[in-house]
Length: 342
Image (cartoon, rainbow, N blue to C red; front, side, top):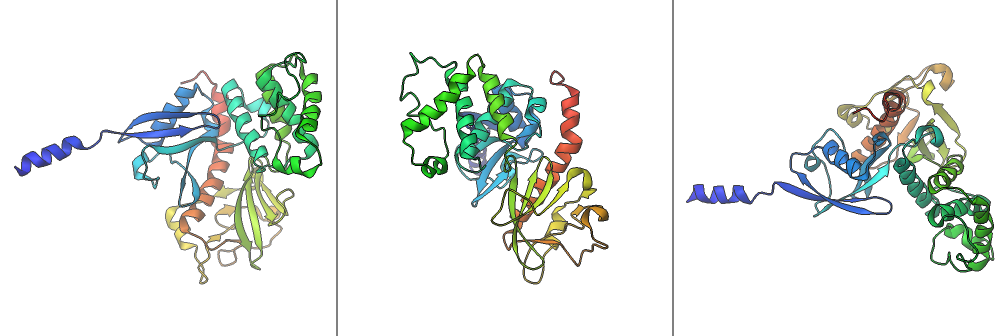
């Protein structure tokens, strides 16, 4: 009897699990094998999207209020993911190119970046001046509606489109009709521009915005002043807490000699006040001339993580390390290898 019960229980164990993949404008569901690693799921999503420039993207999930990237080399179910059915992941750009026109070659890649950056501007995650938002909105309209036709695109045709950040809409005493008129004036100038070209023009303007492609993390300096650490395609930057536009100090990737990270190492960077430490002198090795310092040591860290969970500190260090290696070791190699290679 015991043998039969065990056999029945074994048969009832699921062989697959369901996931829901959320892109900026669509949702997809897949059945995955229990043994699948993050890369197996990621590759499946990329094939479904017809995406070959895969190195820019990742699968993100939220756990305990913190956004985390799915690890490619570990089993999906062995990671600290939400206990839900289906399991939800957001397919998002993880790395941003410095020059979109040169690095985003595939139309689907350009489109996914366009949708994500447009959402970040509308959600005010990327600051944009009112003048620039109107021009960007006109390219978004061109991408969606094609060439302007006054007989077809009558006043009010943009009434249900979200095209401007709320901050911009509220900043001036203009009605929705007035904003539409301003956007349409630019839109009419874009005649003959195809959808992919309009989206690329949008991205070429957006990439010059100060907050484009920057990930921010809270840190403190030795005087316990709250600061922000920003990571982007150009390097690592230190910002004042109230100024995300102009960094106080920057370390370009070319000036950074090495980034070291390990589970054991991060766990040991804890002070008596229980602050997790970002040791710029040993986690990120910068030539002394770039630092302007005569000596750097483990006992004298330059910046500290705010008191928080260990997993957050790991995510910050992993993000920094990933961006360094992705940009200078993997990214360019993959680009040079060509899109037609397996």
